[in-house]
Length: 179
Image (cartoon, rainbow, N blue to C red; front, side, top):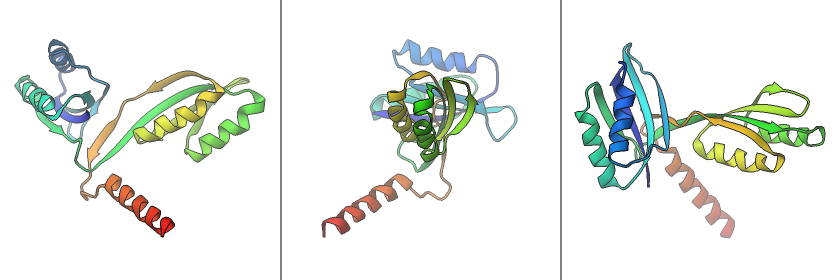
């Protein structure tokens, strides 16, 4: 299972290196990593996606707290959150395919950020599932390059779990259709 960890750290040299070293020493991979300034000056938020079971992630959390400059570690995997990712996709866009590609971009609310005779670069922002979906659709046209930021996430203040609501609504729609 993949877990999302939100880590607040003092913004000092070497913090990220110590965190990466901790994971490497224990043989764990970080699948996604996003770092940036947090709400207070001198504090950064690190959002990372790590594979492992609950027990393993709990142990990693305890180990993280032992590092200098770690202020807070929170496993937000099962907490209602707003999650976003940014992807830049350079795609081969020959004239005969360009309108199809632009239609896909429009559906996913992607922005065209660069255009050339045979290529487009699209900027897509959204939840990680959206990124996978647009990538799958654009593969048929020839993705030349792709760059992803990694997932960033904040806990919802409303505590509303939109994933749970979406699943409940889909089940209602299915029951209405089958009735």
